[in-house]
Image (cartoon, rainbow, N blue to C red; front, side, top):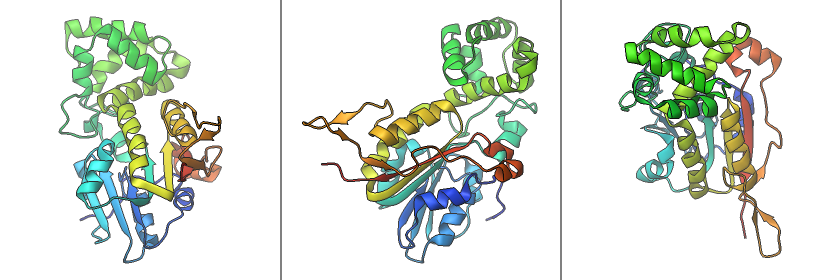
Length: 305
């Protein structure tokens, strides 16, 4: 297997510090990607340690190193508990999730994740999944497209963009990235065109892969596989993800509802290790511009009476 990474890991030193790795422990990387984080975790594990790494992308799985301590899982992290149980893992000492899209996906025109190169409107992390971005654009109602663009892209002109998409597909279906750009680029503010286009593509990618639903399921699952002292390290890249993670680490649920005991005292299964998110240094941003929007949060599992 090749060991050449196609993704520069963000906040690597901060991630390892957050995991507080025990050499003999069991850890999970739910977003293997190019394997940068996983390789660094393996370097700190003893022969008795274990790492389970998830990825939906067969190309990422093929990039994994040969290491008897590493178990690769080709699947969605939303099914964390089931996959770990199948691998004989009941409890873990730490979990990492880097929710960013890898360089490889952005730079591979045939995957359709970026507006910077033409290719099919795919955007599926798992190539065997049924819904592509093209199918979404060609079949979704104006109301659904409006909701997607407004919620996941935070675009003020979401409805106008959705209506333009509906008009365009009546003449010809969306197939390629250029098909979409011809419709939406003229609607962008020239001063913010690249940023707004990125928001359009982000919104479609999130919907195609049900990223928010998967994240919710993952976070809920961590409560079943962690024990007091286990660490949870999550790196987010946009406000919707970060809000869910922040709420979960503070309260134990993604809505941010406080759980109080009989005496009105707030109970939470997590202790915040990073009260404020950790961000990339200027030097890291210069070396890896995509780390600019990364926010790392760390929490430690505690016993709840």
